[in-house]
Image (cartoon, rainbow, N blue to C red):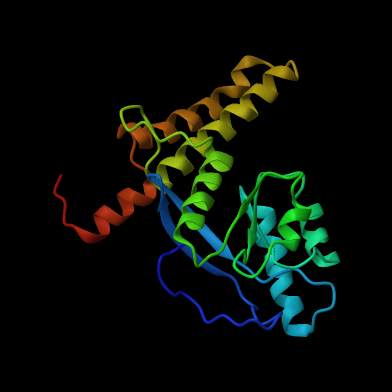
Length: 214
């Protein structure tokens, strides 16, 4: 998916212990990939630690790419992973079509991507499936207002959180003047997007680095 070698791989099961993270562009959208250890029932101590990290990464990911050995009949471990991800957005990738399709044929009831990582057309199909699943395949409209930086996302999240608390206060039937503080916090957070407000942390950094007269 990256277009270059990123990690040492092995055909021996259980040799991946840690997560590997990289960000690539998919149809103009930055996507952060987290490659993890496979989930197996019988694992040693080190591999089990890697599987714990896999489960944490899976719980936090917006979309899962489930890689299945499509050349072999589906085993219990493959079925367990399919069951684990059934209720969430996912792309099922039946890999190793160059070696056979016994497992891929068992997945006919599911929308899957079949192929091999050695085939460029397969990687393109996998990217397309990811785009459809994760954001509907629509390209971002750069002419419309959008969030382009982490601090913007955090500012909107803070504003939404404050407005949510204000709404809860009103729903409880409490006096409207009690929401003034939450509205002020929401206004201040959104001010970071428009440039109307400068956070205390930002001002501290400016005065620490520059000599500014009255």
